[in-house]
Length: 341
Image (tube, rainbow, N blue to C red; front, side, top):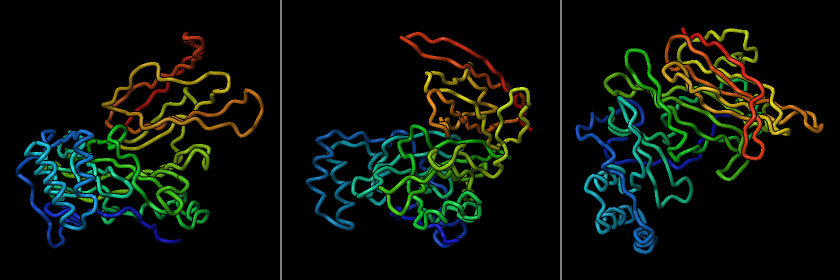
């Protein structure tokens, strides 16, 4: 089995970035906490000036130019200081407070691809780059049967940045002893950033209760719906449930799927009938898998991917509805009972 190729350019940060805890250069906690004050929202004119004045420069001159242009555009001192922490390579586009540590969505204007990235801040080290693949523990991924099968079919399989908009990801969940996990997704593609999408991978960046970075853990491989009828694989792939009379008993932190027959061609679909108790369970994603048969009105399958976040009991309620002429008609209700140990 070939070793996973990591193709995204690594951002070499100058102050607080570290690759592996305990190695030379491991930085201490940044006492000057990073927050939303460091967000910068440049105008189109500002970005035009950066492109004109900086575009032909290289190396340190290029990165110094971004800092100078930010100052000329009256970016806040906190925004400029954050860009300096990144060595002038990018600026903070958004800030996502998470708890023990936080996440900054960064825009890199000089990258040819993958302009957006995530850095985890306010821990120890003060900045951890989620797009530094040297931090990822790839052994867990490369040993899964799903990845081995994909690698045999796609010999150029490679890891690229996934969702970096800050809308769906990153996610966070609690770890034992008040630690925190930041969950980041990555795309598997067939050799290049514009090549066929094979699937998605999630890794957790783990921190203890004081913000010390503990390392990363492979969590989930989600195959493309086109490649896999369930579009789901994790460390416990048998956790797929379809019978509401069966109580779902699962451990905290595990992921599971509820798979429901659904006839989208007839305008029918499943929806959550009530909000989830997110102290116990959260919805990660949902997909519709097209039917194997090409018969008119043939039913497909909806897969609802959940992750447990805390211990206790709750219910997951679904309703089967059809939207027709601005009216929604409800056809069926089902309830799954969930117990998290």
